[in-house]
Length: 305
Length: 331
Image (cartoon, rainbow over all chains, first blue to last red; front, side, top):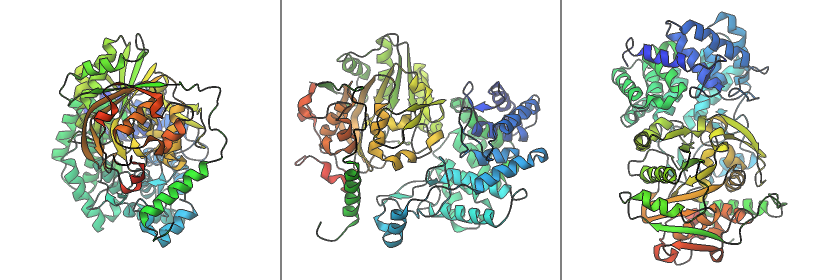
């Protein structure tokens, strides 16, 4: 996307998608949720323009209103427990001095949560006979989960790592470092053959499972301070290869953000992102609209450490 | 068990132990709510390939049953899992298009296509790359991403899992008829994936994640039953068996041309028949065994076949080693 030319239509579409309560839903007209609202706030914060500042203030107010007493954020309106979009909400309020304590509370929630333990049987089995497991992974490594009562997977772990690393000026300490180290170990344990990540299974019943570009991009953003690690380098290359076959706004936006953070040229991907919007309108996904707006500007300022 | 404990034997043993653990529980459903029919009907209609006039075939299939369509909101739930240039993983867009047209011709108020892919969040990629986006745009039909739909929590009507309640998408809760449109496929966790297992896709990823791992921890087979027992509207099934998948399904298997579409209003009977088409014994599929107790019919004698004979179209589907025991002896 042309940085200057393509942003106004995206901004207008995002502004038009804002719900009456100040948040954004998965699509225009759907109930506001934390993921879409956090990404929209990040996008508007990085793309000031007519109407954007008022919408941004309302979006931030929605996030403030919906932060729960335990510091986390729920999925959205009508949901009553804190869960996986919390790191995204933290990213959206980070850097705003008046919301510093909000960010710290959110980060404490992230530090205090992990994917569930697989149980003693799986732990023992992994120690004595890992080949008996139908999936090839170290199930004892705990990253973060989608559902608070579920196993660790790649995407929520990457969001959590990104928030904890960007949030270090607000919250730091040995417990934060320990969670970061374990989350990183979990991600490296789930790297697919040849590089890249999918949702989190590299091999099932002895057969390799291929990576996805969008998940690879998010994982690399979470691991961006380890970019000289061989797995990072091979995964950037794997993502470039995967992008040759993917034209979606969601994948291209995350990939552009990742490549920009890694200092790579994204001219071709930005052009394809613009074409994708024309072709599908991103299937009305507010989340993708916000990500595309970030990608068409300076994503390194939003997601870079 | 004699002989060395191989990985395959170990997996088989743990599966058996898991099955045994389920024995002896109190019935997992309210006997007053479910009235299983004495007999069910399943139609197997030929369709050589995806270029034949599929709308005619689908119309013929639906008309074999008393399906409530006129003035109703129909939700078609295809199986959309991964991008697949060979067209083997997903329900073929031509079959989905035929179903949209058929239900419209039969007087549906609205026909919506809805799916919540279980592995991949990038629905835009799956829908566009599979050709479904172009197909639905040409038809003026709406696609709903069930992973990101508004949701409501519902109480499950059976208790094979300990989940108790699940969030389900408003699109599903607002349907007058839910049409499960799976691919005829093997599955490396469940043995086969057909119209009942296809309903995993209605469980929203926003809540339960990618993969929908909460269901795996609760028990795949048990979750299949609890989801299907709790659907809010009547169901119908159209199985895309024109080209199925054998081997390491549901993603990394091989194409298996079968040249059929399978129809029915008892999803248990449809899946039992589809399994027999694949030379797989339906009673050995745990979720079908559970479902046969109260949701529908599995026994061959309880299912009236319409259209082509099962025997003339039966194929031998390869399965992964873990499920070799499910195959009908002699194919």
